[in-house]
Image (cartoon, rainbow, N blue to C red; front, side, top):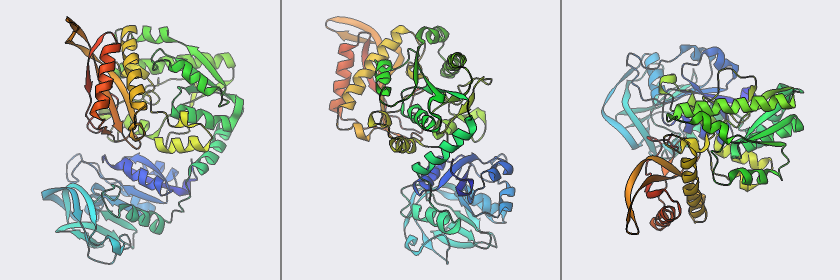
Length: 512
């Protein structure tokens, strides 16, 4: 983690764009953390932030149970920027009025500068911005200047004496023409960030932190073969060398031939890898289980048992390294509490409450593309840093329903065809993930002159930057036709192939 005095705190009020704010700040060389709006002031102060951003959100500020503004943050005297809902909270607190708009405003709008502004540059005058709101500030607080309007809508407020600013539009969304410039102005010129955060600086500070944290203890690393765990393992290896033992578990839920392929890839990296075959252990625990959250918990518990066993073998192992990323944390810890958590992740919510090993998650506050850059900086080959993401629970969550040998064989075979055909096409570079999902239904088909009643496979391919949002990939019809033909012809037990055209949101990338 970089030095605390170079941290931006983003308080999340539930906006679909909150993660974009963090991404934009990271792209500007400024380290940021997303915290729930309810985070206590002591925790916020621990980060020693140089500025605070209040995100947008789906609620109306005047609703009974709407998220509130913790006025303690005003006592920090830090620069504060409220975006959309964040603006409305600030306006309401300082004596302004917020009302429902006569017409909801979603999409592009033009803004007009109405006063001298410390936040908005002259070039933003007349520019396009992205709106997404049903309420608006109908009366500005007395101490605030209205610096921009969009038609009759107050678009920007600021109190330069207090270093408090508000925007009705979303500067973090790419559709806002000069949005990044507005954010940069707030962060660099108002908050005085130095823009010094880089993958290289992260490696240096995290290496030192791991050395101080671990001391002379031995460390177990949960190695999956994917980008995240490989980068985490390499980073920890750089810090403590052979004190780390990487455990690569064959759960039986890996992709076709993946166990042997991954072991081969690690031979040239110099990591200390211990392979463990445990397919029967996992499948016996998963027998009869169909609920996806239960699957994740079972797999998480079994992993920890194996890591505990391996820790005892090497002795003096007190730590477990995992490749947890920021999207895992965000999706597993809800802004509004556990009732609306999207899903628990194997390496976050899937862990048992009591563990003999303490966690080291060096990538916990990074996005996937940042991790790829750090992996490249550490010298890892493209074959590892450019691998498409693969979930910790493996194929267990790509088999909808019960996990057994037959289901695993079917989805492995279908998935191998998808990866071969898409991987060999000219669209591969534009994709985030592409894989097969086995559905718990059968359909009637005709093969030769006979009737079949066999399983259905769904193909999923998405484009994304960091996995927080994703768009379904418009694969060429010829490519889909070839994949479908091969699966139905080559994989006995599957007679129908469908294509998933759902984006995230409203769906998730994985089916479970």
